[in-house]
Amino acid sequence: MNTQEIIQTTEQYYLPVFSRNQIVLDHGKGCKVYDKDGKEYLDFLAGIAVNALGHAHPALIEAITSQAKKLIHCSNLYYTEEQALLVKQLAKVSGFPRSFLCNSGAEANEGAIKLARKAGKQKSPSKFKIISAIHSFHGRTLTTLTATGQPKYQQGYEPLPTGFEYVEFGNLQALEKMMDNDVCAVLLEPIQGEGGVHVPTDEYLQQVRLLCDKYEALLIFDEIQTGLCRTGKWFAWQHSNVKPDIMTLAKALGGGLPIGAFLVAEKLAHVLAPGDHGSTFGGNPLACAAANATLKVMQETELSKHVVEIGDYLKQGLLKLQHKFPSKIKEVRGRGLLIGLELTAAGGTLVASCLEKGVIINCTAGNVIRLAPPLIVTKEESEQLLVVLEQALVEF
Ligand SMILES: *Cc1c(COP(=O)(O)O)cnc(C)c1O
Image (cartoon, rainbow, N blue to C red; front, side, top):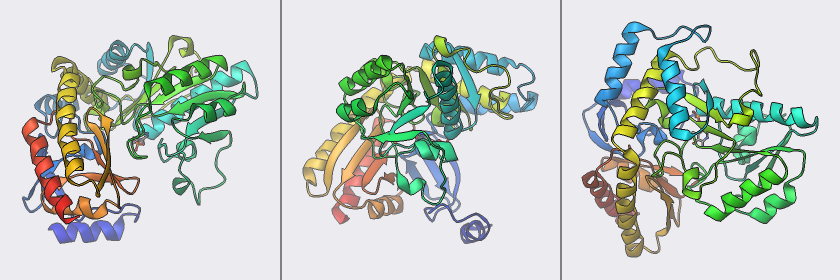
């Protein structure tokens, strides 16, 4: 099929839920991807913070191909070495002693919410309330879209699961007012990603932790976008040193293969008993092999350090652009290689103009350019992004 046929066929047969860029991607290498007609793009989105090691990383290819030759799936009725290695490695890098493996971010949050509900019920039958933040994003299943503090994802799907309340992100007093003994969990992204790259103060997260302790509520951090070196540490909570009771991961975990996880503190290790939760595909040896390879590269190359260096470089460049275009760029924010560039107008045309010039970026929350490149991105590639962005801003 040629480009037009692929687009036309997809539009004809796929449910019309995505508004896609009009290009057909075919292959990639490092931070570059290529469309069906051979045009090269610099990828500053990485499949929405997924392709942490870039495209076609040799270690990932080797792990996936050699595992595919051995065993792709066998169900959780049996043990596999890849799964054992992964849960051990997750414990080692995170300090959380146990995890459950699933296939996506939404599933990870769904499992975390189920566990929090069960833990709450064990204390009191009315301890089931979950507080999440306005402008948060936690997934598209019925329960995770309910936890998502944005009505646009909820409308039309009512009745929604009950027991969810929403609080302004970063506003401690507002949370304080909502807390009581019926709250079983507070669910937050340590940096809001989809909502517009909002970074709270360290103090806010520290005070949220204390409030959760006071009311015996669990603190759940959704690190699906922020986790695994994205912000310059293994996990974003390490910046503020506020450890949650449950942490969810997905996106970068498999380096591109679908895999998610929720990790729990020791005190929660036995809340879910045999039969209480499960997944057919979750933790399959192929996805686990990909995750093991991804974590290994992150560790061996000290990827977080690289992320800090490139992230600082990019941010300096973006601040210079803000200085040049004060009427177009309102704010530059973020941590590591999760950077938001708040524009003074809707960002769709800027994204289109960069795409035209061979650079993939993303706009979220209407007017926030979200940069989330592969974590292996170089200074030269960052410079290339800045040059193209500047050209696009002139026309914007
Ligand atoms: C992407 C994302 C999700 C949902 O992950 P899926 O794999 O699309 O289900 C949940 N939470 C956060 C913070 C995310 O960025």
